[in-house]
Image 1: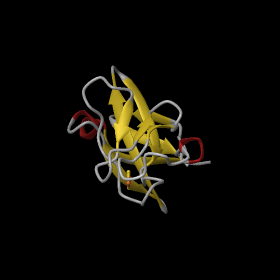
Image 2 (image 1 turned 180 degrees about the vertical axis):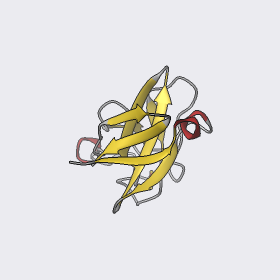
Image 3 (image 1 turned 60 degrees about the vertical axis):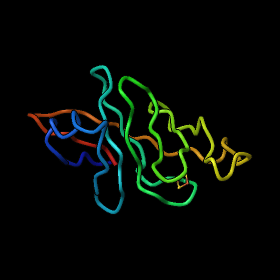
Image 4 (image 1 turned 90 degrees about the horizontal axis):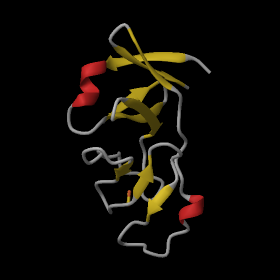
Length: 109
Ligand code: FES
């Protein structure tokens, strides 16, 4: 695991989070109520890029079919509307350690 310097910390304040290319991965990063969260930024349903967090919510919604993922765990907590019986327990996303250092967001992959 290696810490990767990514975007300036202010980038996370806009639009409910950002999806960032980090090495070979796309990572969704956001800050809610002062706490940083990072998870795989590619939806496990049909590979759309996440998404944003509604104000103060602790989940991110996929823009394609509205699946929702818990920020803390990456667990899918609402299925895609086109696949309401999707096996949510198998469709979680990996989460990553994240920190702010000298005004930049760093993610441990
Ligand atoms: S691609 Fe994300 S819910 Fe379908």
